[in-house]
Length: 361
Image 1: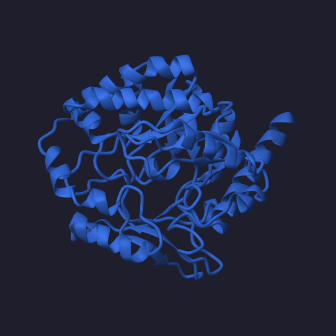
Image 2 (image 1 turned 45 degrees about the horizontal axis):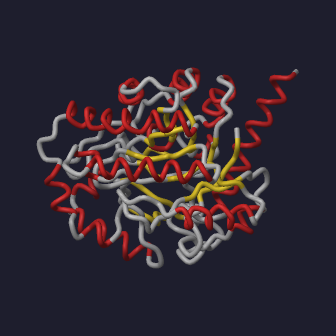
């Protein structure tokens, strides 16, 4: 596996590449161009500058997270073909600069949701939390305003003010949409881009819905083993794969994450992994814990062993972490501070080293 770290880009992340480079075993960053609207082609000069900046710090950039999918593509609306053309053009430009994997999602309207960005834990750290009843009592606008107030310094991806101005229109567009229609729109997109992904040797890695729970009446379609199977079966190419996010799929209580790793990883369909832990408070509510198995509800050893057993050679990142050691929004975005994610990366690599050495004995 290759250990990587999420970096939101120059001017969009208080954590610097110099700091990331100092994390033991860190090979590269996973990044994006957040200011490029979904549906637009990424300018080549911006990609080139991003690549050169990362490389100048001794790090690789082989994974992009994300090249966002425009709502017209998800809805099957007029104009989707032009936006798919722009997506393919972006893929071609990224491949020119050594990008090997694109993480993306098909979540309607909202990329993610939490009820609390800074939930205080007994040890003095704080973390992101999901409380279903709390969210059900808010409108999307109220939740967006809460995020804007709590995050303070940075806009939260998927909850930008410009997007929120059209939230009612966006939600209405999905009213009455049948599951079969949504999957048909996904297939249309995949059948258009996957031949180019094969030619460019870019692994496409869809991210599951986060969280895998109903919110604001929107469809939730990639939330379980069966949904992942259905999505991958839409196009059988190995380049149509998965970002296996333990914290997203694992937020559906009872999900067997090691079994999913063995099934989809054994088929070579997991290209990228977000590995983190969470702690269930009941069947729907959870908070994002430290990575250690003993502090959460997921068995991190069993998950990493499953990756090792299937010979996983893709990219991993420690994903979300707590804010610790007096980190604030000026030192990291919610869930994306430096210290706890660095600890998580080291912990995961420690498990991996033990698995590697054990396999040789």
